[in-house]
Image (cartoon, rainbow, N blue to C red):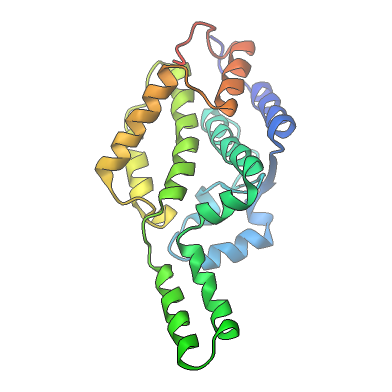
Length: 225
């Protein structure tokens, strides 16, 4: 197997653009991302370390970073772009749920008056609480499975510490405590690995595997692992 090269990364970037409409934007140059960083005050590393995908646009902290991690991340984010392209309204609404229900606060005074308006407003505000998000967990697990598959194809196994790292991510503030159940996250990661090894791949995973084989980065007989 050959090591991943700059040319490989650039070729994969073109593949993502062509197949799934992925567009990469430097995150720190985006006014929208800077404004979002203010809203996401609980995530102090949002601009510097987090790659964010909205629709099919990938906001990247350092678009010139090209290495194994960058490839795995672009692969992960391309899964999000693919999922968005298939279910645009549902993907956005479900990914942001249940906190998106806070938007009801903006309509409460229009739809209701007097005491009822204040009651609806108060109810909407409660959705700012970091309730678990089953849908955001689902979409992020699909992206995480991409990262896992890349490790399995190139190393034959999931990297040491990856499971603990992802458990912290799913349970912590980075994704607003989207699934704070460590045992459940561990089981979901195990199920995702089993699907990869059984060859039960998403379209993004399948085409990425084919790309890596064609570029000589992964042996053709590599286990899906």
